[in-house]
Length: 167
Ligand SMILES: [Zn+2]
Image (cartoon, rainbow, N blue to C red; front, side, top):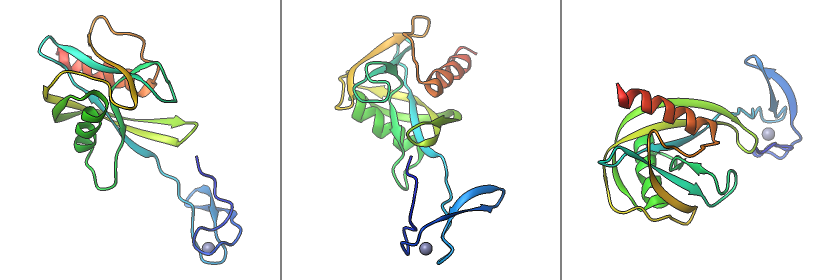
């Protein structure tokens, strides 16, 4: 997480002040306030005709070598659905059409401070999975036969998805 020492607008040293019920770095010279907000990401919940879910083995840190849902950070002016469709294609080679939001989870992150993960379900997927540049492997898993998924937001979204999917 970036910690500012100097004002990015006028380069003065920053001071901590109580603003809107939180301690925030502020610039006494120009009034800039370092508001901190969660970073939005999308995670993909894509199942094939056999009702198996698509997972990726991460090729980059954090959680390198561990299974996760395909996904990544949203770009500027991108909807969660569009971000999920783009990440699905980039990480697994699968083209998909997003449908519903399964859930939204906010989780603390050492690197980013706080991440807001939107779980996006797919109604149609097409293609054969092949790992993209950020993935070591990609595969479909039966919902009753899942490998360990150590990213808490992803395992929680998957749990919610399975509950909705089975009902
Ligand atoms: Zn300033």
